[in-house]
Length: 156
Image (cartoon, rainbow, N blue to C red; front, side, top):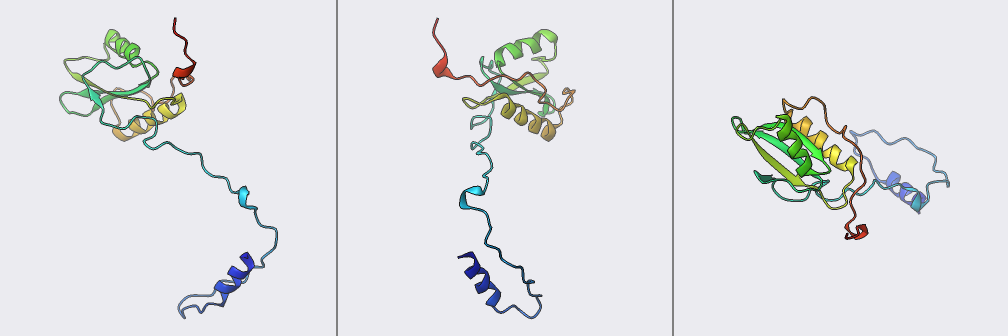
């Protein structure tokens, strides 16, 4: 079948201003139909659930991407990703990195079953996009964890 298509296209007349394609011998060994590798499927919307970021509400104890937004400029001062938004927000308050009088908290929950790699890739993308002044690194260096699977959890 492939040989027939090659012969058909080579038989078509070429415009005068275009050079003809050189003859290439066609061998019978090509790739089988199942040999083509498909790229891994990326869920629509990536690692973050669809919707606008939530602002000035405490984050949940689940994976989130968060930003400290400057009240003066309206731009992110800090961007981060974490497995437990509530715990990480408390750490920022205790360390003095988050000041509610100068900054607003904005966060988005991660999609169910998202892994650390996908969340940290999203964090890196946002740090590169916004260049927040309080981020000392390019992001994505946090500890790796397995996605939470609610069906495997047991009630105690």
